[in-house]
Length: 375
Ligand SMILES: Cc1cc2nc3c(=O)[nH]c(=O)nc-3n(C[C@H](O)[C@H](O)[C@H](O)COP(=O)(O)O)c2cc1C
Image (cartoon, rainbow, N blue to C red; front, side, top):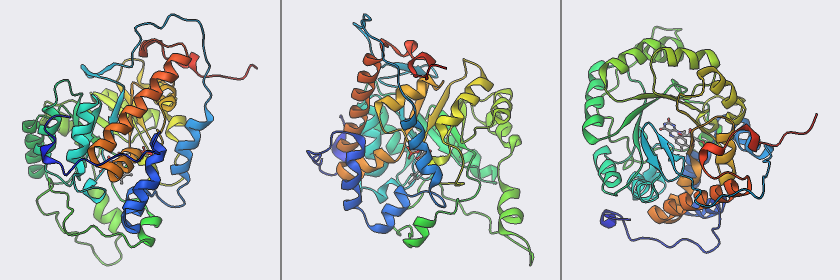
C-alpha cells in the first residue's frame, strides 16, 4: 500500500484468521457492546439478516473438470473500469466507530487490492482525503459516492459539485431507507453516536419538522421530503456522473429506473437493516436481471462472505458484489491491513471456486454453475 503515512501504526492480523468470518470474534472483542450492536445488527428480529446468508448457503455449485483453465483470472470491468475481482466495499456509515483510521484505511486497502469502493454519505472522514488515498494507488478500481436524498436542492447541488471535484466516478443513491428501520438490537444496547464521530461531509442544517397535533412524524414529516422518481430525473440532470440506485428489487421499479436512464442497479435490502422479513437478495436478484435485460450493470449485496458467494451472485446475473459487514470486522481487527487481507482472502476463494467449477474468466460464469436436482 502506498501513502499509508496518514494511517496509525499498521497492525498485525491474528494468525487464526483464514477467512472473512474469522475476523468477527476479533472485531467483537475490540468494540464496545453498543458500537458492535450498531455495526453488526439488523432490523427487527434480524430474519432478513440471516436469510441473506442462508440463501447463498442454500445454493449448490456444479463442478466441471478437465477444462483447460490456464491463464484464467478474476478480473472484471464495471462502467468501463477494471477491477482485480468483481467486488466493491459497500457504503457503510461512520467507520471511525470501528477503527481510528476509518474510511481512509478502507480506501488504501481497496485501492491496493484493486477492488472498488463506495463511500457512504455518512462517512466519518472527509471525502477528499479518502478519494486521494484511493487515487494515489496506481491501478486502483472504481470509486463511487453514495447519497441519501435531502430535500434541500442548494445543499444537494453543493454536495454534487464537491463529490465531482474530489474525483468520484459515479453516484449511488440509496432508495431503500427514507426512514430508519426499527433496529432493536442497537436500541437495546443504547447505541449513541459519540461526539467525535460525525457525518463530516454533510454540513448544513436539516430543516426542522413542523407537525400539527395528531400528524405522523413519518407520513407527514419525513416522507413528503423523501425522494421520488422526480428526484432521480433531477439528479441525472444536475450531475454528469453516472447514477446507480441501491436498494430496489421489484421488477417494475427496476424497469422504471432503466427508463429514467440510470447507469446501474444494486439489489440490496440494506444488509437486513431496514424492513425485517424482506426476502434474501440472492432470491431477488434473478427477477431484477430478468427485468433489466442482460446489459445493465447489476450489483448485489447482503450476506456475501465467501468467494463461492461471489461466483453464485454472478451465476444469478450480477456483474459484481458489494461486501458489507465483513470488511468492517477486518477494519476493527487490524485497520487497513485487515481490510486488504479480507479482500485478498475473498479473491483467493473466488479463484478456487472458479477453477473447480471450470470457469476460466467471468464470462464463463452463468446459471450452468448452479446445481439443480434432476427432475
Ligand atoms: C453499520 C452499517 C452501516 C451502513 N451504512 C450504510 C450507508 O451509509 N449507506 C448505505 O447505502 N448503506 C449502508 N449500509 C448497508 C450496506 O451498504 C450494505 O447494503 C450491507 O451492509 C450489505 O450486507 P452485508 O453487511 O451482509 O454484507 C450499512 C450497513 C451497515 C452494517
